[in-house]
Length: 268
Image 1 (cartoon, helix red, strand yellow):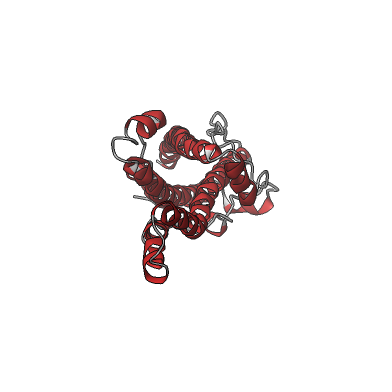
Image 2 (image 1 turned 45 degrees about the vertical axis):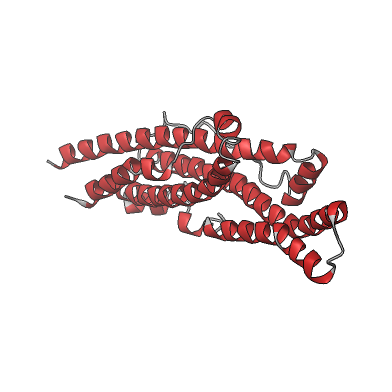
């Protein structure tokens, strides 16, 4: 097996690994409204942490796919053509500005601590330092202390959701740029095998359009409705991206297989 065939085999393995990285949730409305209440909102919490896990897995596989694609295009384009061409080479995806992978247990631990401190600590404080607090006064004290303790954890959770939206948009931009450069590199040697393949943008986040602070302010002003909206977008847009990424990567893989077959025929 030559190097070109080895690369295509690697691309095929990465493509087939989609079922391990591109986890698709049930309909957001069903999961939130029908499963949220019966599970005491455990399902939405699970979905939040699963969003982080699938983001990491999807990014790792997609970046690997782009790296092998870059290597494959290098094999298909003669070295002298690369050196003499004004067409930009594929970007180095390992040096991309994407955020570092998140780990689901970090926000989980912080949320757990936030829950403990907001629900248990106020009662302990009231009991230990002011045993006379009772009834409505105790409830009000617990609410104030709990809110002050839990608010930072809510901000952290929201910043993760904001970061996921931004990261998906950046990864989508990287995929589009990688495909564009692959087309241009092949076109420089008169090959248009990839020219009919295009990404349909699925992530509407515009980097720099809104800061995380503005998102938090929007959530406060809308009494939490913007949080729900962001959670909806995070779930739905990611799943649309998974489908579109699978379509494009499948088309790229088929085109490269055809090129490899034609290359073998010429050699033989």
